[in-house]
Image (cartoon, rainbow, N blue to C red; front, side, top):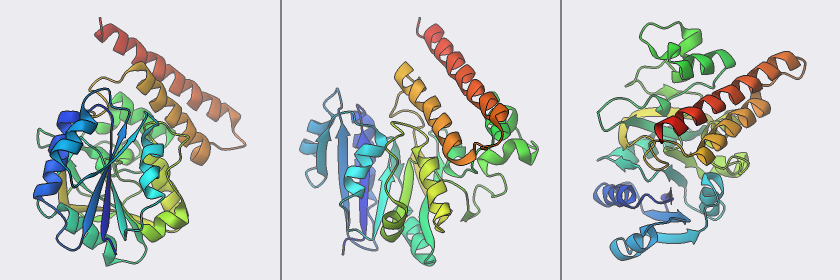
Length: 289
């Protein structure tokens, strides 16, 4: 049986995808056979041609811009591999990364998902690689920057899973969608990614559903991957991406956090999301001039 299926969804990230696929060639899984599938989600550049010409061993699926969840689900729905890795095109794996993650996944029968330590090009930790589920307070603190400082109260900083050290393996609420290694059995029980999210927040949603079904989500820093954060969707989000991100925030809150008996709180949260969207769109418009 195929030990590992790797799915890379790409939209117009030719140079980054080339680096990602080369890293997989240079640092393949040693503990078993793996297959790499690229789902080209309507790239406006020469990405699919690059994959065909430079990486003939990579399976290529061409689709329109159907969204991150739907594109990954094409492979998740059919794969018979023991484990499936969702990998962003703006990542690069290092020596031993895949084996460390797979070893952790197999270390306990109820670990359903594993994420690794993600670092930026500057060598800093991408704090999204280990997260707690956001509360209205922690989300507000994170986006305003109040919750990101050293020594910040746990109620404000908990979104970054500060209870766990950067180099300390352990259970977390969520890992980042840039590197999500999942057990096939868990995927079959939990279900596929929610296609109601076009882009963003689907990873938090999936992690929540894993925990709800009794599957653990684990952070394994013995494996490290580079994450050129935001590069695959653009350093500056386009208006469509901003809207998708904030719609995802509202969808996640409605599905998991919104109390049925507190309409005032819910109205305040939704108003805050709309206000943040308006601010983000205004900033994007100003910077684009």
